[in-house]
Image (cartoon, rainbow, N blue to C red; front, side, top):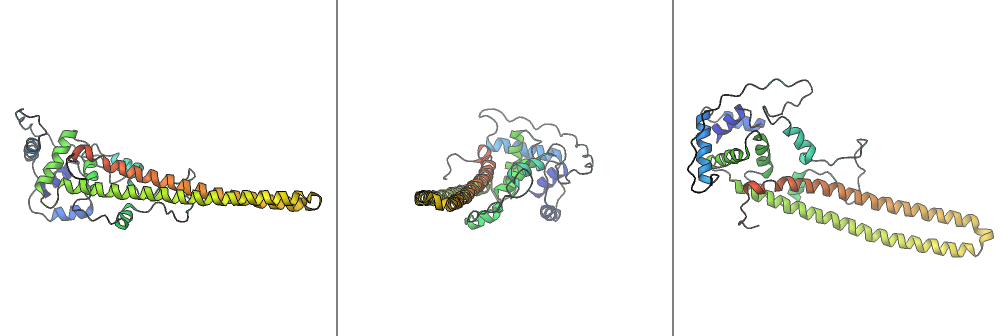
Length: 287
């Protein structure tokens, strides 16, 4: 697998982390040539059934010329962009849920913390608290790999991943799919917990508002009987009721807003993880 990944990285199709670069640099063997890559992809297509049944395998295409070196990034551009075609993928990932904090108000200030409903915790922390076991090849890593191979056609990209899977016995694609399923279940449970927090807060708010309504009615009835002497007290009591109502509603609105922000963040991550299903999920596998 090391030579294959080194070759993809050299061609600018995959972005490697510092740890992966150090690990691969210690593996023997030079990067694979383009003819070896095409042969491996062709064999993988035939092995995994990417060609229609009964159709003779197409001959491997002629080696493609080496891509021109990517131009140096302009000042202000991210240094981690993938050369060639994946330059916008890192920014897209960061803007579509790849980060660990939810978006704040339009003025850039973070949302006010809500008691009992923490927001923006890292997904790794959420998975650890949910008891999601470690995976030999996490779903996020497979997503990063697919993002780095966006320059390829979908069939070729799938064949490349399957070739890497076949070349490395330490992991399988099913490891990533199982990891995605476990994390989705954990996120679904967290969404249910968010709903429970809001439901409990709504019940408490309804009871508190009813008590305030009763208080307002009692104060009005008592004070209106002595309207001449107690008019000032009536105004004071009604203002206190209005303040209490506002505080209760603000708390309820804060909890609802926190739920919607966190739920949107979790749903976006579930959608990102589910993007693996059309490519690799076995429909007959147990959930």
